[in-house]
Image (cartoon, rainbow, N blue to C red; front, side, top):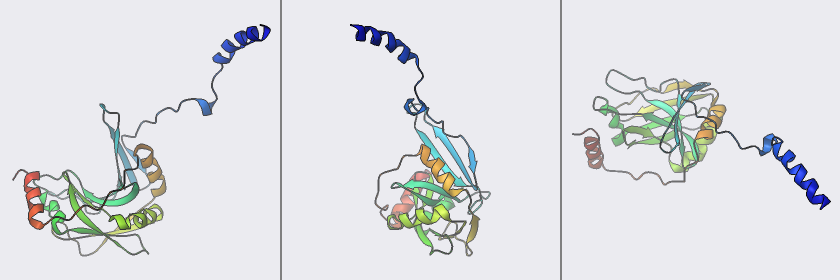
Length: 212
């Protein structure tokens, strides 16, 4: 009985003691609305219905600046099949900027992290976004080279944005930006490369996209 009385006396005292830091529940980290990390900008939005965050990690310097009637081409880092890889994008295409959409027919982005060999990244439409991403077979090399690169060369080929000379983009703080992005973006499952589509099918998709 003496032991039970001692335990009854000690339990309230123990319950009042603060938990060690390692045992306390982690406080959720709010995703940044806009945050500069080296040469990169990380921006996130949160769906108030699901509390899920969607983040875009984009290089501040344009691969091809926006024009009067065409959206700019940006170098982004995206999760593709669980790997963080470089992707050249033109987001939120409109009817006036539909010329960029022609890259989905015949276009590709050539991306190189000197002194490594370049990547040929085919372009395609993902909703209203033009995306040029590494093939699945090249994703591991692209992720590895990106993390330590100090510069990137980008050249767009095809109708809707072709350039003769590559654009040099300076990179800094990439490793930190990757780690920060991964805080708010779960790895996605591995996927096969998007199947190719014929020119007629691509034109039909463009017409549907822009209501023509």
